[in-house]
Amino acid sequence: MLYALFEYIESHFDLPGARLFQYISFRSALAVIISLIVTLFFGKKIINLLARKQIGESIRDLGLSGQKSKEGTPTMGGIIIILAIMVPTLLLADLTNIYIQLMIFTVVWMGLIGFVDDYIKVFRKNKSGLKGKFKVMGQIILGLVISITMLNNRDITVRIDKKLAKESQLDRAVSPIDDETPYVDVHNYLTNVPFLKENQLDYSQILPVSDNGRTNAVLIFIPLVVFIIIAVSNASNLTDGLDGLATGVSAIIGATLGIFSYVSGNTIFAEYLNIFYLPATSELVVFSACFVGACVGFLWYNAYPATIFMGDTGSLTLGAIIASMSILLRKELLIPILCGIFLVEALSVVLQVSYFKYTKRKYGEGRRIFKMSPLHHHYQKLGYHESKIVSRFWIIGVMLAVVAIITLKIR
Picture 1 (cartoon, rainbow, N blue to C red):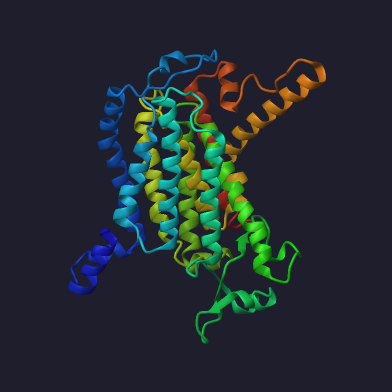
Picture 2: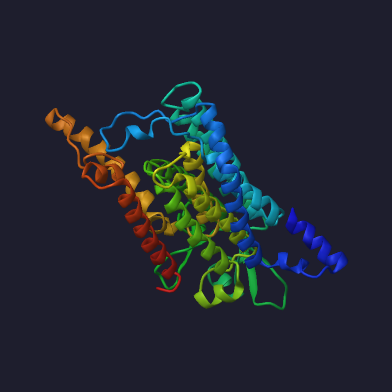
């Protein structure tokens, strides 16, 4: 809104300073500040409201140190995160940008699913919450919206050299910018592959199912997007088990995605780093700033000892945002590195359950790999203090983020 307003003022009245809102760096910095203000100003009010409504977490006794002290802590704090993302996004982002529109849909849609889940747990006193099949159905719908939009919207393109397009037989799927430039906008089956010098992967060329490249792309791309969104969103949910853990890790990942947005949306950096130039993705830098500001601001209340939990309203939404941004930025193949904490947490649950069932069938008694899953509870059982576990997971998250960033140059 402010972006559109100052764009109008600058073009019609030439007001000094109005042009500042044309700069991604200025709007991103302002977005962080507004996100922090929203969380700090409204956060306490929302916490007090939830406490008055007695919307507190009921803790199942798992034999963990300090567990019962969290009984009654307000939950559904993801409302604060969503508010802190949406307010600066609506004020400062270009709302005509298709990438911003998709991210707004992601926040609202997954926030709604998470809210319904928390509502059933808190108000209906049903600890299982929303049935898993309905949550997965919601994630599938989000994946379909993003993948189908990417395959059909003419504003979502990759700009590459005309010669490369012809050599890769992509000329059927491109629209030339003009006759004088050596570039074309490819629509829309390409992604970056980390660590490889020729780091271009064309989804339309993977399966020799049809002469129609679009058919091949649909058979690979749509299921892949759906799988990534389900996996990352649920992994984020599993990670949200200690004060500040999922919030801090998400902030680190969000900052990294902001860097990817900036270099991918800047033709000079994209050419220097030999990555795809993605027109209009620089606007996602503003959204990333909103996301990071919201996570950092929420840590004010969510750091140990937490005065509010984000609930599924927050954890499902954070994971969906990270997955969606990675896909839009053609960095979905970097998710195992970038979201390594989420991946390990989810794998620990899968391994624990699978091994327990296997040993129960074979020996008649279930055995465990970890003392408890997800992995952060294993370390609690070993006697590590909660804040130490969280701090070390953050450090590992920073290391993984650095590795993800240097893949831009290591080929």
